[in-house]
Image 1 (cartoon, one colour):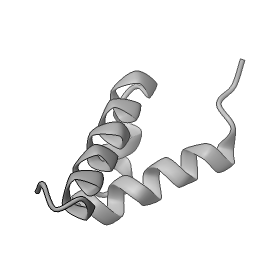
Image 2: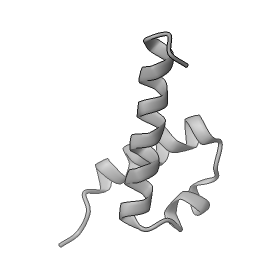
Image 3: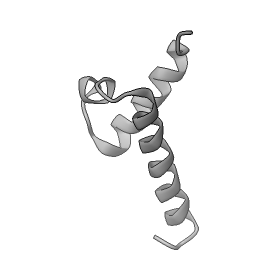
Amino acid sequence: MTYPVDRLYEELTYLGYYLHWPPNALLGLDHRERLRYVHEVARLNLRIEDGDG
C-alpha cells in the first residue's frame, strides 16, 4: 500500500509553511509522526481563530 502523492505534498506544504522546516526534514518523519504534527498545527490554528491562543 502506498501513500497518495498528492496527500503527501499537502502535508509537506502545510507543515513547511507553518513550521518552516525544509522538505527533507519533513520527509524524514514517519507517516504517523508527520500526521501528528499536522493535527497539532491544525489544533493550534483553531485555537487562535477561536481567540483561545
